[in-house]
Length: 382
Ligand SMILES: Nc1nc2c(ncn2[C@@H]2O[C@H](COP(=O)(O)OP(=O)(O)OP(=O)(O)O)[C@@H](O)[C@H]2O)c(=O)[nH]1
Ligand SMILES: [Mg+2]
Image (cartoon, rainbow, N blue to C red; front, top):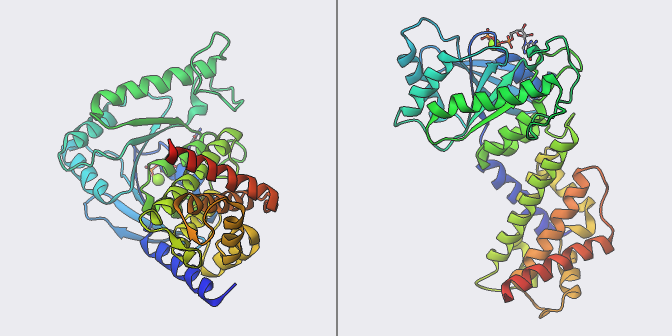
């Protein structure tokens, strides 16, 4: 690898890091519903509290945590306090939500009504300063307490439509999820409500739904803090097969978006093959994001290492020359389909690597790259 490439990779990693923000999550919910337990279940024992920052509002406080070098900011809601104080409380929620990247609400599954929560969410939603873009992510926690409460036999498949042979527990969970969605839909206005049943008591082996809650959190976080969250929450760890499949889909979205961006980058001017370095920032960004999805932290040193490990699969002059020689195009210029296909190939190689499945063979890689090249070319021709 030449010094020029090494330098380009370092710069690209640096730029990506500069654009990232520490994830800031607002956790609402009454006293004792399990907010702290849920936060612990999300990040695991590695979460270390380093500081408490006084929030801008009177009652809320923001806790600063560190996990493997990443800072996570959690703003905790105090119990709802005296009755009659809800309007003021809601104003504080609005203020806290302004800086939050995601707003979550924890409810206890074995309660009814949620009058207080609904009143507060209702008036925050009506507030013109409240951002309409953020969906409300609800953890319907302590799902183990739903009837029959003595039964605990997960996994409970609560997402499928109701079936005649659902167990009593599954039926109750399905009904409750639908009910809560309804109860909050009426107060929340245009925003989306996502309800995920969870069990967040740290008692070994009893956690449920937290993997899905993490996935949803990833999806609602803005691009700028999503990957720091992903790395520290280790989404793939202890995830169900279903959540792992969803993560693969997230990875594919990242690869496709980068492949498109690479095509766009060379669209107006096909660039000389020797100038493929213009694609390094896009490809490095893609590799960092893919790493995050599968729980890997990538700094400047490891980016170079990964790029070297992936060998044939990565943004070196060699792969570009190889790719270009495979493809039936003008050999001295890098057109959009070539840029896209090469980026796609790198993405597929990186995904495989991060999933712990090694690196693809040259044949596998060639098939991916050619397939993508043909898809892109056909689309452009169409
Ligand atoms: N059965 C059951 N108990 C839970 C669950 N999640 C939390 N708990 C228990 O509920 C109690 C309260 O949990 P916390 O996480 O402290 O609740 P909190 O919302 O942070 O409470 P405050 O900080 O006081 O507002 C603890 O005893 C937890 O062990 C759950 O999913 N199921
Ligand atoms: Mg707490």
